[in-house]
Length: 272
Image (tube, rainbow, N blue to C red; front, side):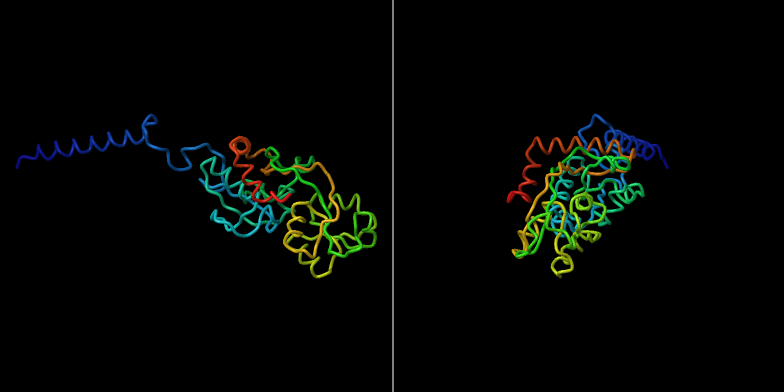
């Protein structure tokens, strides 16, 4: 039996496969790159996914809901989802304690790539954390029940004031709420039920969060605001995510320029 035609056909088929493989791998071809390996190496916890750590709930910055696939939404989460989209990445969110996040412990452990939790940029935190460019300007504020005799910070002597531990609100209360008894709680998720139950007389924390409570419950009112020149930034493990930090800053600038940032901002703060 003459096998030459069969061998020739096999060789031609193999050559065709090799030629097609070469085209698929040609950087100059029209094929779109796929997979995380084709993009910049950001040292991500999970290839192709930007994993964020956040202390939830802290409305309007982060709370449960939304349709981005993470189970969470809010200003921080939506803005970070837009940044991830700019970088060609999916987004995932992990709920963590704020104190460990702001100290850098959670970030260094490799739990996530970025911290997104309404975190004020401070010199003390910069010792342990790298920050993105600022993305939000904030104030502190004092929330009390309607009808309270507390009209401002000078009325807090002898009162129990709730603050979130590890925050700039706690620092401000320690420095300015003379005579007050401070009750440090892990998050707004504990502060809000505490004031509703009458366990504390006031909450001193970030203005947007207290305004959100005031909007949702007419039984509470923000009686005073404090200009502390605070700016929020996304957080990174110190010295470990420099390429990702640069990419986030670039994407943040692009979102400001193309109007996406303002659209997200107006979704949550138009009433202000």
